[in-house]
Amino acid sequence: MSLDIPDDIRSELEAEIGSDSSPVGIDAKKTHVLILHMLREIEQRLGAIEARLAQKTS
Image (tube, rainbow, N blue to C red; front, side):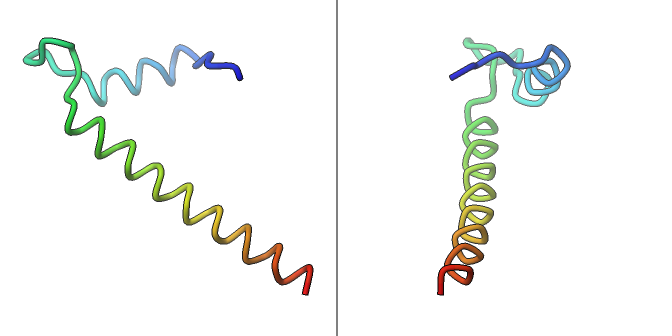
């Protein structure tokens, strides 16, 4: 698995979750909300794909 992230995408993500007031440099709550939101979107897309596959096989 490649974890290479293009520089422009990395910069955009760093700007979105960065926090100068955090000792680790990121806003942990915002980061977790972003991750959970993206996982929910992936889950919805996967459900739609599975539904289409089920229709094709029945």
